[in-house]
Length: 222
Image (cartoon, rainbow, N blue to C red; front, side, top):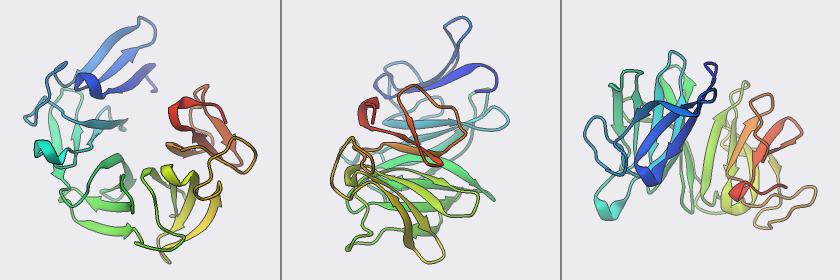
């Protein structure tokens, strides 16, 4: 983060924290350690947290049907107040929500067949990609990012590939990795959990692929 903090999602402890690298101490926390909940100040089934411009944080809660917890996305400010919150009960498992501009956000439905969905703060889906059959089917897509040209970069986790989807045609226009064939050699991926446009912060466990950066499952080198 620009302030030198590291944002950490800690689902096992039901919290999101930011750690000051200079001191190693927690500088900010949302959630009560070890206590899940749906009231303000609590989180449950946390999947991801994205720092926002202005100091806020967008939190994705995956959801848990057996606990009657729908997938949820919320924004929290620096004071720990909820700016907005929306449930997405039509999804099985929400993953890695992030802003795409214009008051809209993208989130993946981590299931097979999976989907990529753009929604607003009211929970209205304004665009979705999720074919039920054919080579375009997504298998547990774990993240999606809107590229500068408007296309979406998607980590298709269980299909062992990263794809780019054109929202105007709803077609895959680029792919890296062989569908359903994990590998560590050139042209292959193994359960990619995240992909970002190159130029972002590169942790030691990721590798640039052309103009993209891919994180393999479990942080294993590829």
